[in-house]
Image (cartoon, rainbow over all chains, first blue to last red; front, side, top):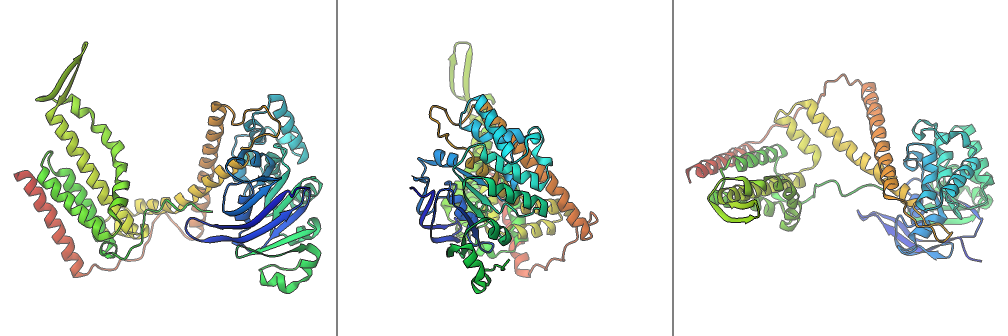
Length: 236
Length: 266
């Protein structure tokens, strides 16, 4: 069985010389749900941007047994659904429908296929009646759900989310947690929400200063108060 | 995840960098005016002006290559003066006829075009030395010192501050689009979509950016109002210029004036 995500010895520095990742290695099995936690500036978002080749550092990244390089970029981006932290970045089309249809349309699918994909994706996040709405005027919780639908419509194998519960009210957060729980996909979720991690993710990876400092069962790691404290986290 | 390449400022420890920004701004403006006022075709004065700007480039330690590369920015604008070569009156250097059409290259026209090209080129170099050797906040202080209206200076300042925010925002939008620009697992479909569709997506992104900039400006205004902004921009008083700096400024301005007089005498 292939690993869904395999990262080996990945290092990356931003153009201004600021190092962001240092020898990061990580393996995620198909259909595994993993949480990525750590303080701000730990390198979580940078790592995530490597998983579909937006950033390409030194080292080896492989997704669904395809190495991430310029040749495979199109296929990789079809397989990895990346949901950005700020849904306003993700929703750039005039209407919700256009946004959810972007991925399938780009892939060159037939009109009937695109319609079906959009309907399925909107149904998966329970937002069917929002198709004709203007994304700009939605609430934060609605925007987050639509942002997830925009990648579900590509039928990805891996879902990568950057701080999905940030800025949500308790009800929107709760319904998002249900949604993530139900989606049968490989998932890597960067978050500060340790309550959600405890509830949803059996495995947890802690990053700090561009390195992975702990990787194990969530229940075990959350008991280690000294470890959590050392990396700017609080026991839920 | 920020855009880094926008800021033209290059930190160095050169003489030009240490010069007071007010002196630098005035001298740059004076240099550009002197260049613009020099009549066409006075090549000896052009060479003197060029020598001045090259000395400034060398003293600034920015690297001649860097400045010349950036100065290439002037060329597209110079093209606007190109018709002069063909539309001015004689004597003509070249005259050919193509059927009913006559192509004539006029000598005064060519001279005017070359003068304009050369003058724009050295003026842009002066601006580049100024922008690369002075941090933008210092430039704002200098603008204020030479009595550019405060509101205008405040607008420049806000523009500079939020230009980077907007650039970051568009970078994130482009990344989000790239992330969803994939190839389907089903074979046979051609990825990329039509040109028209892509244009529509890009249009949507631009509109989105505009809307967000618009809303952000509202929020910024509210944040300013919440801290007591009443439409009047107040700023801290500026430090006084030292005598040596005044001397340097006056000497340089005198030199520019002499160059102008020379240009009209020649």
